[in-house]
Length: 67
Image 1 (cartoon, helix red, strand yellow):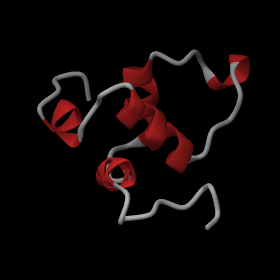
Image 2: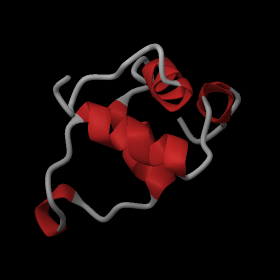
Image 3: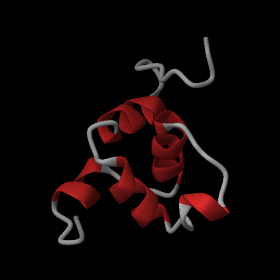
Image 4: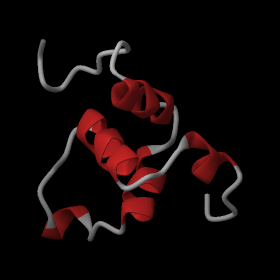
């Protein structure tokens, strides 16, 4: 399987799949990444996996006042 594809059979990837609906700027902000001009470019899949590793869930974005 392509490393940039999420496997719904994997629990961590299922969590990342839920985050695919969140605007990417909100994910970047929650991860505390610096502006795009100062960092590497990540795919949406990579950013969602990073958010899951950090312990973020869809609930963190839905009920957040920082959107």
